[in-house]
Length: 272
Ligand code: HPA
Image 1 (cartoon, rainbow, N blue to C red):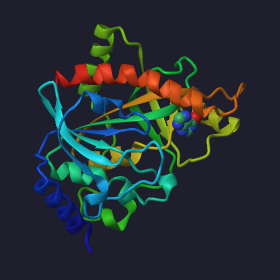
Image 2: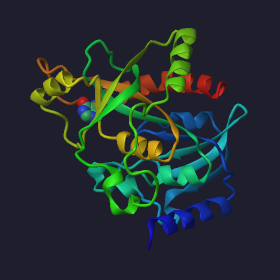
Image 3: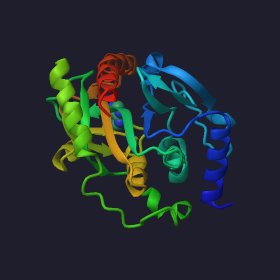
Image 4: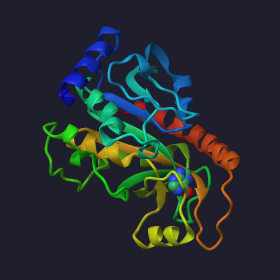
């Protein structure tokens, strides 16, 4: 079956289930679902009920589309995402983007948890992604499922919207929430990096590292969607003082950052 036909069937199902077309979409990163508590939910659909929609088996991962309002702003939230390390292909990882595009989304906000390579970042702090480095050694545009979906040689001069970044920077000044601005490197994972890899990441210009976001941003750019991505820094990656991985602390730092993330996203929604 052709990708376009799968997407068409998924979208038809979603629209039949009372989700309305909407210009703003959000993909929520793993463990960062608290924003949903601030949404006046109009309709919620589990991914598992939508034809052809991928489903993650990861813990801490919700799997649903929410259509609702924050204050008076309508939004489509994709609560639950797909990673390369779960053995999804790029068509599956980026499936929510194709669906959003068909549902009228032209502005996308993506959140994720990431390790801090720039040691000026603090645990629990937010970082706006101004650019990225794809270290997954693969592209969603290089899979046959993507052929015919749009431009092949997609321009990546400005993958993240300058306008949306400026808005977040202004909000961070007004709300006095300290927020970094940097380059996100995307690896496959799921293992964390060696100290030599952290040194390498620093040398090539990365400020943070994580295992998601970049495939979705590539397809969003192909489809002409304006993008904003924000990382919550959950751990610091100092190659000379590597600490044992502490999942409890990573989750705690995610929660700390999430509070600020929710605050600035609610402010952003008032302006877009
Ligand atoms: N490396 C890769 N991904 C991550 C990290 C990290 O240190 N922290 C959170 N996500």
